[in-house]
Length: 481
Image (cartoon, rainbow, N blue to C red; front, side, top):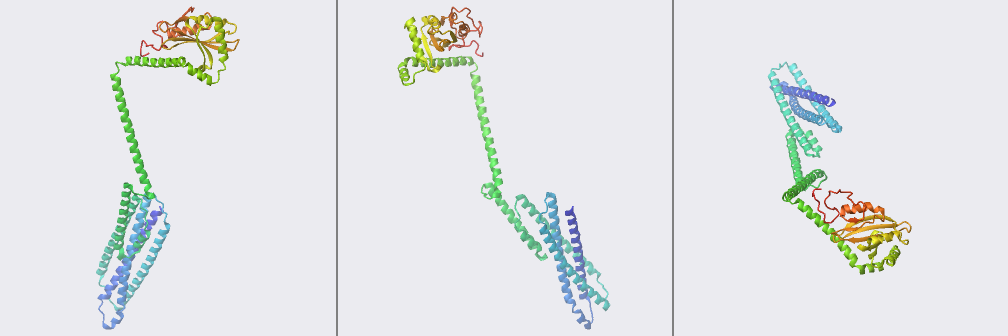
């Protein structure tokens, strides 16, 4: 509200000053014209000589009034435009000092105008007194009307000029704000405002030239920023925007490429799937066979290497530290050979892959007899069966037993190879009752028949199940299962 009051007050003051200046001008012109039109005798001429300086003073007073009016009107319009713009943009007036200076300069101009007006009024009063003394009637009111009309025209012209200057200045300020240009030439504008009425055109030209130069500089900077040539700190924000735009475009392109590749892969996969839909079962069976064959080949290779590489194993054993269970293995072999003969065992070794357990490989025909001997011999006494399972090596099948002696706190493993086409072996359930369920499991999943078992049956899959899933050549009856 204080800004609006100041604006209204400034307008009123400017109007009063313009009126006072116009009145003074009209009075001065009337006095000058009256002095020229008078026809007096020659003896009065010496008294009329001072009218020439009066006319000069009146003319100078009129010029000063014009200048003061123009300055006041331009200052008031510029200030009103600035205040209105600040109000629109919510900008707090941070330059009270400049306004104080402008007011001080306006005050000085007002004082000068008042002095000039006072001098003109005194001259006019003197002229009127002279007319009265001489009895001269003022017969030229039309001249006053003409003077008023000319004064009004001059006022309109001054107002138009001031309005044009204010509009140009407001446009230049708005353009600067849009382009982010800081006004670095306040002194030149102050000088232009302080110049006389005769220099208004020059000031306008200068202001237009400055605005054009600034606009050209801004356009040049923009072009340099777009070309990537800007290096100033102020150009970092546009460069950052360009970098962001480039990064976003690159990300979009990358995402589009990924989506395209994914769609192509999907289309290819769907085409391949459609083409191979009829052969799905055949492919599944072939894959299962290939997998089983590879696993069997790997196991067979490992077994052949273990069997055929006895020399390397002996060398490694000689170089390596002896197993702590080697004495137990030697003991078992010695007792078996002394009681059952040397042709019972096919092989024996320390299984490094299974906690160095002593392992005996028994022949097929001596399997049940060796099982009885290991349990009932007083030196061995393996009275607990901890594990029994079967394995398909494709070339043959194996049955594996793990035994433990609670009396001696020792363990031993027994392996026996059986025919894969007719996998059958004696049941050890009569020796170790805990073999009942493990033998049923081996029968259910591998098809190994344990003769002498009291109730051999399928315990997982049921009697109606076709095939044995743990065989390497197992083919599911239903591929989807």
